[in-house]
Image 1 (cartoon, rainbow, N blue to C red):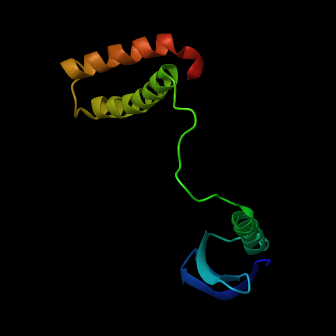
Image 2 (image 1 turned 90 degrees about the horizontal axis):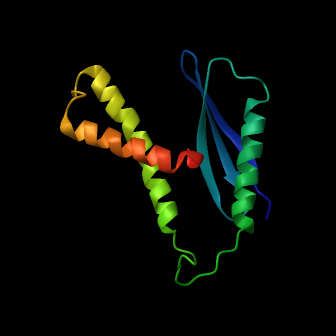
Length: 130
């Protein structure tokens, strides 16, 4: 069945905040969602929001997943694992940099220096994957 939507309520909750509650139904299942919009929304805001949500709902309805055990047919290679570790280390490096800049962690701390050397080596080895 096709999904439809009904605007249930509009609440101008606080100055500059609009809350719109929408009820979605496919004739069998129904549920409500509340959407927030700050400032002055464009007139087509709610229509576009609802249209996008209906596309999502219909996509989920069209999805067929077989039941049974789930296995990963191709486990990651050693190289893929190393690249993933490097990408995670790059994110950690941003946190470490902020901590150093805030004075929480000294840059000359042994753990920080070892971590920076590790990231440097990873960057050299996996530059193309950054």
